[in-house]
Image (cartoon, one colour):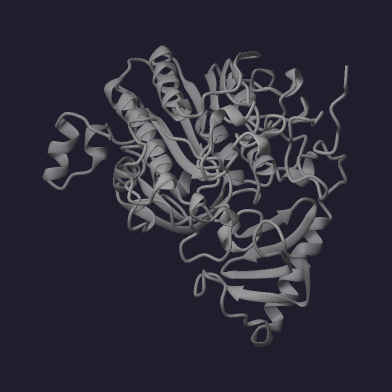
Length: 476
């Protein structure tokens, strides 16, 4: 749990004063002398649903650290992932660009696999690569899933160090796994030959997934302590609660929600480790921490998958439950404690936000799909995002502008159903109706017409790019 001694911050809170009372007005500096550039920590869950955290309404999953993070920071209730499945979503976060622009999506293969020969191209600029030029130490811990070959690994994309698995934890199943007691609902890590890597080297195969979340947390603490005297960027990308589910002994069989709850509660514990370490090292006021997920819950796995709460559907779909994520932002003294941000934002906005805060400039040689959230997070302004495009592979399936969301194509859940084309398109007001239950297109033909014009303008900016997901692995 996120425990700490009763501090001056706690004393000020009993007097009704916020964290800002600890800092000089207008000064965004840490207690570490001479340090002015802010640090950045992105904590990224895998397949976590909108309704899976205590602070987002789950009745039996205990997330005291994320709840505390939300109480000291801000909940973002209309925050979208860049895509509804792993690889394109992570590409969008890392680059601030829709995956359709850089080949990190496909209509034939949803994500990268161990037999994939492609990955995020060197021509792309990641958050880490951009920050390295600004003098930042950069570390990646956890699931990468943007290419497992040397040219595509984190250390080839601006990260000084890497500790984690290169693709999803359910891949690389052992041969004849079905004959060896395999069960997705009673998993054994030995059934998955997933490699654990340190930088470019495999240090464990198969990765012991029973302890992997625990080790990610420990690595995150080490990274922060090692780089406390310099500006740093930490990308902590958990490979859970993606199935198969694993938890360490300390958390196994402890949650009312069963194994899925055990897993989420252990991830929550690592959030506490990060926040504790930042506090203890005097870095809290100078560090922006963002917690979110790559896409919605994998509903086909029943109670081993999560919940999108009141949102419709989950992973693999462009309904709200597939791409709207539980998100918390934290930076004491800058983000007002207890805020609820009900304005639209996205993982695509993380890149330009970090660029602005780091004092860098956005590249001008390519198209970006994100907007800086600096004013939104500080409370000095409204969101700059008015439109969101919902892709599945290369197909634009939906668009949201303001409160209006229009579906051109839909496909329920992750597998089994066929894609349905809608003519006329389906229309919902997702601020009035976040569950997308009540179709209202007949009452608002002018809205549909306006959204169709927006799509035409958007598609004029898209240039065809060969898919990196369809490149086969060359055999020796």
